[in-house]
Length: 170
Image (cartoon, rainbow, N blue to C red; front, side):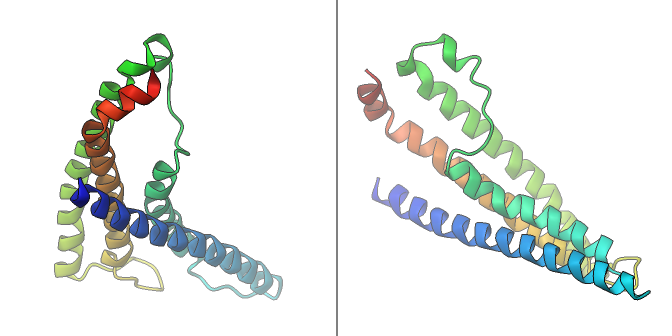
């Protein structure tokens, strides 16, 4: 149990860092868009706005998702949960977390290969910026790993504390 609590604290810290990164990316996007508007008023441009805003949206989504999950902010379809007694919710919580974690882990294995391939081949974007593609892909991969870790810990927590869960709900 102590190991689970330590892992959960580390996960919370990493999720908060991910949320801060997501917030900073939102501020970056705002600044870049305002700069682009200002430059275009005078006939100029950064010429990289579309590319970098796209990267920022992808990274922001995957880095912010674990924190939102941790805080219970994701949309849940409670159609099934509303129809069964609360003391029987834990198996559904466990299986939904475990299956979703497995999906993210499975996707991240393929994404890792993609990042690795982009890095070893030196793949860059086809734009003026010539951004090494492994950088935004790696940030998305990190977000995938964070969400998978959060889901695994959530599943383990539901499983470990199911007796307390049953007592609280009665």
